[in-house]
Length: 204
Image (cartoon, rainbow, N blue to C red; front, top):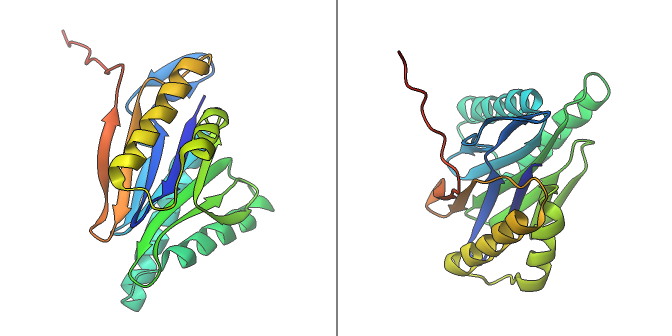
């Protein structure tokens, strides 16, 4: 029951993801971070099969870093999104990845942006987007309350509304969420919204 969503504000973009690692009817952990910091000014929120998600997002992260190492300049958010789409499209005809991606970034020239990339390699630049079962509720809330000129505080308030809606309406709702933000100061973790904490198992 994954939930990944994001939006673009006045001078920032943010991505929110649940933190449940689930297989079949079992919850393995509830603090899995599904939003990768791609580089200093990019975030990559992913949903899908856990193996595909981990392998593909790490592959993209290392290739983006390799490009910057070879050329001395980082990829723009649009270029990184198009590279990601290209790799998904190539894999689609060989060994497809079951992974959906929201890529958020901040560029000096163009400001904040958000890209929606699904598992069949379609790419769209969006102002708000979502994947997973939680998207039914988060998209509805964002359609109602989203504005292009939102401040960080207003956007986080909207995120909290989305999380409350997911927790109250989804039959098997994820308990914990992580919020990450990217703006002119870089990509960083902003907050967690936790209703369950993983407890450590005492060793004998």
